[in-house]
Image (tube, each protein chain N blue to C red):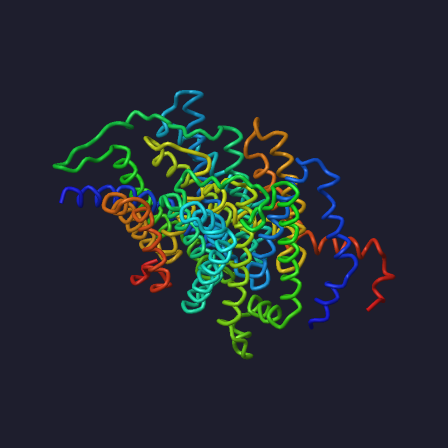
Length: 331
Length: 288
């Protein structure tokens, strides 16, 4: 089972891709580095969401809470209480993990169906955004402005630009690796059994509560950590961006477009859509605000109608056809 | 005491319209099992159509429904036929994601056309007030209450005693058996979805006078509608109207009695509590 994971870890393609990505800042202009950094943020977020939403099949719309805790709360700790952001990152991740466990427990205890789970998590997300917008400690509706990034690593600063890119690259790689690891571990099999048939999973003795909580806690903590890094990169903690349910919807859509429940699917979706959206916004944002979301929506609808399982399976099919039947004989 | 009456009256008035918003969603869910996460954005669409008609022809929102209702009904039918019908029978969750995508398209389509500034659509009743003892009521709210209840009763009678209504109920109870009885299930599903969206055009006109509108408001309307539908037990007609009133009153109490964010949270807290402890919603009287 673990073999697949170690194979990935020692795969030259993986490391090659990572190295090529890492030298990008020296090749591209700072505008494109910024776009790639944003894409990596969403790769990390969509991959962390995938553990719950894709593998366990539970469309959680509560992830804006974890991102929001990771960003707004750690920013507030730094600005209001002077707590180092590294500690803020840990504290936020712990709180997110606990909250995730509570949500998973509620889901299990009250036997929520798929629909009820979507609704309850959406209600939690709305509550979160209302609380943040109304609570001055977290910056209220006007948000929080972090001190300038001077590159002091001990204060969770990466020197903006290139440093933030490498930080995000590392985080995104970790999130994708966690996906690979879980998919190839017993946990991944349990989660997929729960997704496909919860009653049957329970009948053959899968401890549903335990695995749902495990998945949710891992996913929530990753999302929270990414949130902290994201807000450090943005410098401005904007509640309308970071704790709005819209950010979760974006993530869900990226994951769906790429391929739900696949290790590389959400990453693919984010890598395709974020640069597309950002470039559109850069070119037309002043004349047509909202165009990039509009395009996201159109892409999502088309992908769902054409290939409901996402683009990754579609690409794989095309690849197999292009390579011809010669591959079919290989093990 | 005055505050109490004021909160109750305000909550009841606005709650009736919430109930109407939710009836459309409940009907659609009952007939095709689809939960439309772009519901609130269709409300937005209806409101902005009224705004466009006002800016172009100085048309009062109450008058512009003669244009918006047929238009939105047609849009609803097209959306169902081209987007949602291909997904029915697929995984339920794919429809959720599809309508989330649709919500982005609608919200930002509106943003691109109308811009992001909050806008108002004046109406001849906008600033009129009725004072009953100590309670001040806004006329648009009263109009919304009366029309919402009239429409709800009309829908109820339609479901009870017309052929179309009976076929809706038949498909809801057992689509397979309904098909065997010669009911065109596909047609009923399209018409119900169209009807659900058409109702939204009306509700939009009712909510509009005096309310500033923004393209980004759709999601919040979706959430409110979902709260009401789930409270009402998804397809229970009476339950949904009751759910609307409860959410309306909770909202009014929250904003009048509780300061700041907790007040706004009250409807959600009530929702989560009911969801957890009465998972079937308010369906004690199963009058369907």
